Amino acid sequence: MSPASLANLSPQSWEPVLDGKESVPTRIRLSPGDAKTWRRMDPEERSRVVELGLRVRESGG
Image (tube, rainbow, N blue to C red; front, side, top):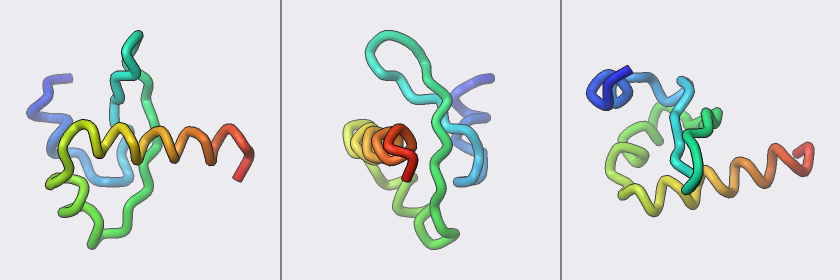
């Protein structure tokens, strides 16, 4: 899948995230209003959101 097609996925879609070692598919749940926010985020901000999501998922939250 090309980066261009990834950019067109809905916010509820799988978002491939580079964790430094490999690409990890991470489920990002954003409300429709947050989709614009996600597109405006720089990669560093996105990775922080993903890290928080992974921590929540790991803790069973």
